[in-house]
Image 1: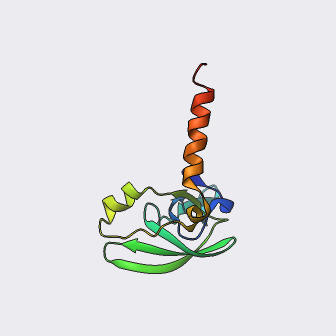
Image 2 (image 1 turned 180 degrees about the vertical axis):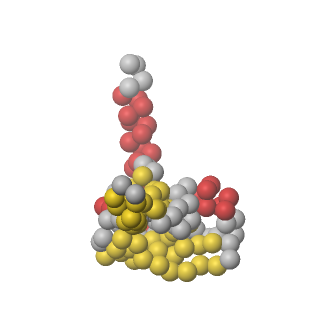
Image 3 (image 1 turned 120 degrees about the vertical axis):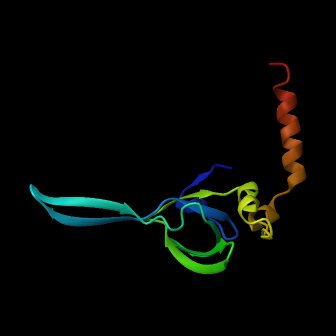
Length: 126
């Protein structure tokens, strides 16, 4: 699975984090005219966010932290997000029980394994 996600890749039950937060722009007077300063809102960068609802471009996430959890919204037009691995999540929060992504409920894992064997056999002689 790719790590950096696009808006269409997001599903309920996924664990994500923010790569680049929303940018704030401020204009200050300077000696040579206005000076523009940019600042990233990075309060969710690296945090464990579980997607609990979506209505694109907005998603509702539960932010899991050692001191508790809280819900918040994200506008995916203004942030870049990435998928988190179970290893990362359990390194930060070892007691967090991960919910299974419902996407895999409809997949026949045995068929996927059989397809891998067939592909391996096809390319074996090359």
